[in-house]
Length: 380
Image 1 (cartoon, one colour):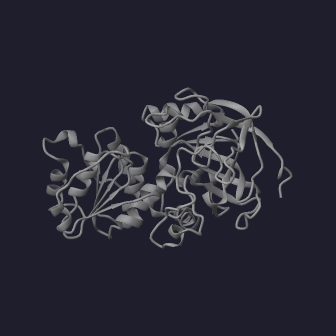
Image 2 (tube, rainbow, N blue to C red):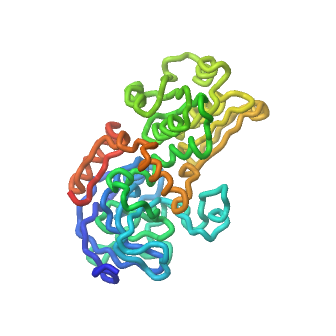
Image 3 (cartoon, helix red, strand yellow):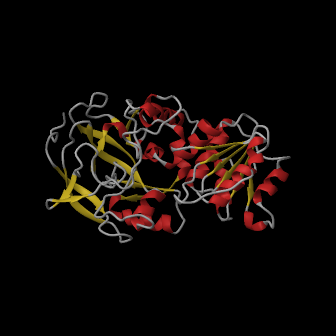
């Protein structure tokens, strides 16, 4: 075990004290891991829209002070009682959802929605004892998504850590623990386009571009990008997008435009905006007989959509997905392997890089729509 094992570690963390206010680099205390927990030294982290959404505290009960962050890479510093498949020095990716390997979902080949460790945005404490592992001056600081990677050290349930190849560069693969794997898996694991097929991607943010990257890897012949922001189109070409459609340029539903472009509809579509209108367009633009539409974007919880039942009876398939259907511990190492084998191009997703001391710049870049992923280096 490391020399710090079993003791409290003082370290720097970017603390959100209140909604929408800049994070403050603070000296905090990180308690040692308890049963089935692991303490990780974070090497690199990146900013995702989910962090920004809950930092702004729009549409949910605010929980502050809090340490955000859930896309990261790090090295195991110490392990708690009962942890057998990780040891000090292992390289890991913390993941916002988990895999206990014991529940019905984890034992199913068809699901990655662990009963014990499924994403919980409201919980700000560890699942084992209901307490936080972060504190300042004896007062608790809340966790986020069970990861809290905007800290030099964090404590994570072992089921939410993916052990990866030590030769994988931590400053690249850190972005694979959330949005990019979500989009990639939505295409490769759920839509499953065949070589030479046509694919439409709705929403060309990081998740949508990862879905396009999946279509490129699968050998799609046409990848149609759909977005209301024309400035995204040029960048999207790097991710395999071959054609662009802006719904604002047409006076009829975009699904009709796409159906006309593709002789009846695309073979597969992936929706990455969470907009209900876009969801229906994505479903109704796939070809009858074999078309599959996959919903990735998260809508408001009370949203509803309508479509004609004949669209389903005419053998179109509508599917949803969570984290690209990847089981975090079992499947995510294969995504890292795809990068190592040069099948998946990760570098093009990382548009900015800042030292930890400038973490608020990452928020500025994202709020201005300038970044796909901003890499935050904890050692700089």
